[in-house]
Image (tube, rainbow, N blue to C red; front, side, top):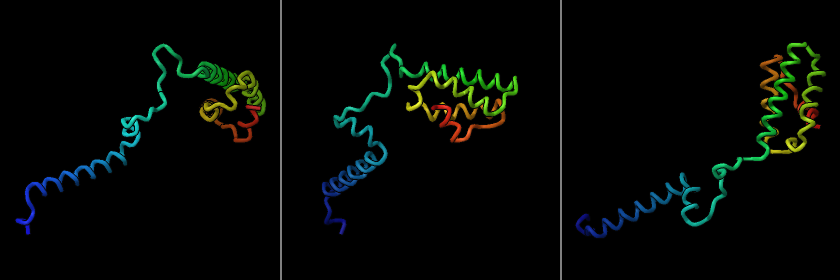
Length: 133
């Protein structure tokens, strides 16, 4: 049986199996890289040197700093909870462009983290929605 298969046929079969194997591996695990090699341009994820990544990032930093200051003041002066929520709302009202941005969830998470660390309590979903309005 093995004498009926020549070395050339054997090597062709092994080469074909290797090509199929590596094609499946590339398609399963390196799909994004493979499509980039085939000529489809991908959107740039990094900003060019010297350019800001996003124009909203300084405002996000300002909001986080402002909320942190409010929460620290609420802890030191023992604000009532509704006064604390109102104070956070007063900080956020100056940044309406962040209310519907891709940073809203991250800001909400940071507000809850800081509130839990500072005051031992987190804002509910309803309160978080209210502070942005």
